[in-house]
Length: 605
Ligand code: BES
Ligand code: ZN
Image (cartoon, rainbow, N blue to C red; front, side, top):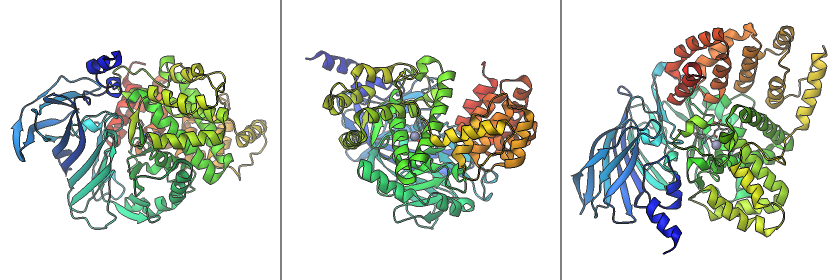
């Protein structure tokens, strides 16, 4: 018997042994299929029903370990000889970031297990909005955000990205609401109140998603449609009109889109992320519907996950860069192919600056790609590192091996690992065999290890720059000396670079002058407004105060609000003001936005 086999027996299969964020024991018994039956109860703010798993037994075990968080487990049943019979279960202690393990007796012959349960109104992976909190004001809205480990707050599940499962679901909602899932949504306008879904491709648990609300539908093409509240439907369909072209472009570079339809769901402004790559139905913040298609790299990003992330998946949350680094790289390639190098370079340069900020802010050990999380909650360590450092690593490889060779490698990678989850170690082995060894003496394994296992950036890392931004900087110098800015040709990107790089000793006069000429305080572009408001806090530019308040009260996308709260928390007066605004905004914020910003405003930093 080989040593590694003995080790595998003792600690579980390699991928599983590495996932410290799940109680699942996938090497003993796994759950390749889920049948979900849930009722959406807006009064109680609960999902109620049952989850039925098909069992795949890999050894003699008679227990199934599931992850739960904040769930009430009512009873468990087994399917034996086509009959449902009750079975015993126990719940473990509550772990602050992992939730509670649920251990179900599954005997040795049952083919299926069923758990009857309810969620809690405080479920970390769900947000419940009252009618008043929606744009239409008539109907409530609810949605899930499962990545990274929040599926367990609405489904008892083997909540590890090392698992893949198919699912069917029956969802009951109040009448007049439409339910959608990360599955085969129908484009019908009817609202029967009961909806059936199938997801035939095996996906990791964090990609199970649901939303219900007063949704309307508009097609962009044969295989792309937008789901949204009526108020934003036409604007969103216009904003994202290039989505079909993005799909074609990505297919040409990296192989077929394997998920049938690609639809977009526009969420209320409290959606905590820019986007979430739920398969067949990306969830999208309304804050990117800017009116000028300037923020559609977000769609390129979520679409890119259909290859990197959803098709080839990180085996654990320590390997998140395998999802986000590859996706940021692919996103930028899509943008370059469709909109040209100038725009792609600007977007990469903006990301690079954000990364440099995070590298300064974070502890060195948290700037490692293959990060050691321990049992910390992955949400607590969210940063640009897996995104932009991961992307730069791939840009580095592209530059060393040439685009042609690197594209071929990537395309093969997506085929070879399609519908599988892989760890950083597995990636390294593959990289060595399929790229490094094919052009010896180009990049040494020690360099790869530096990228993946060392903090910060290697000395010879690419340093993205942009000619367009160099021109912005020249203009800025002239303007600071009293000259005029020529901004007619500026896009959102140039504005962001300009605002982000204004000297910190800029005079109050110059702030006011900018605002007078360009109405930055009133900018309706969520990113430009964010950059300006952050500067306004630093510069104590008081005319922006009320806009800052309304911004924090209407937007819940964490990336746009938390840097503002972080900046406000730096002075006692601002902190006091920020707490007041936060308390008013809190009922409209998602649980994730609440947790992160309460740590900033009430935590001990
Ligand atoms: N999958 C992520 C969001 C995520 C990552 C949620 C990790 C929880 C844990 C999504 O694809 C994403 O990266 N969104 C970005 C998009 C941006 C980089 C274009 C966002 O929300 O800002
Ligand atoms: Zn992503």
